[in-house]
Length: 317
Ligand code: SF4
Ligand code: SF4
Image 1: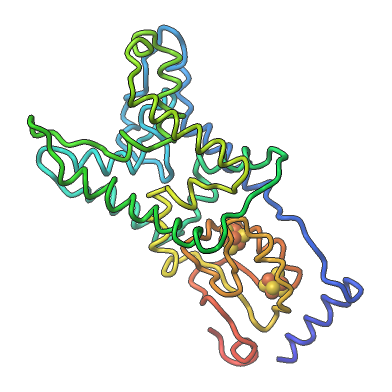
Image 2: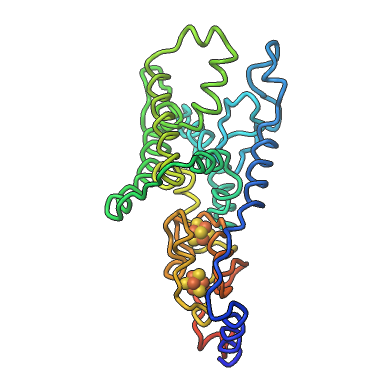
């Protein structure tokens, strides 16, 4: 207890009685996001006029941890959501053990850290949000309902329909990839159309529909922070299921917190880390940790969500 009071006094003293505002410190995260996007889409040969349309070498057997369309000309890995549907919609209706196990392992280890650090579409949305316009916040009621949409999409479009639907020839369909995914349209559909004249000549209603979804996503991202991640992304929904039990987790120290609310204000995913440090909506961007003037928030391995003053003074939690 004494140590905590002392620390609060010291920190406040340093700031002359005021709480210091700090920047989000997001530079490193941007570098990692951009670096990862380049590394995982680095097959440049596919972009040359006489090169292959997409990379199909051995690395394509491996899934990337974030959304990254299989059909992106430069993609070196496969998208886990696309792979999951490919297996489920196969004639033998196999269970995608490899993909589910792989994603569960990542989820158990880091939760939605992947969304914040290793997703190219997350980065694109963040860059769009930087365009200087008035920003919007979806009102709390509709926002809360819309947040469940991504779980519905995971259940119905990624698992249910690919597993259950079969056409007359006995073939299933990857419903999410085929009818919704704006990541696929941006990374795969659009570049392939640009690079290939034959494909351009057969553009139909489906491409027009998916292009419309992409345009809506891009427009929404200018005004709302990461709307695809908040409301649509089935991979974010999947990783979110592990957030409360993952090994790498956030911790809020009540003993140090002075309830200034800067952390909640800084969070663009609209999480209040004082109340729910391991919310399924948190993408572990660390902006709140950097913003906290009392160092009351931290991220580490296996720590508990909340530490009270009593716990801090006596037992280790
Ligand atoms: S709670 Fe913190 S780490 Fe999580 S999304 Fe919000 S600002 Fe980022
Ligand atoms: S945890 Fe949030 S409310 Fe508490 S001191 Fe830090 S920024 Fe302020």
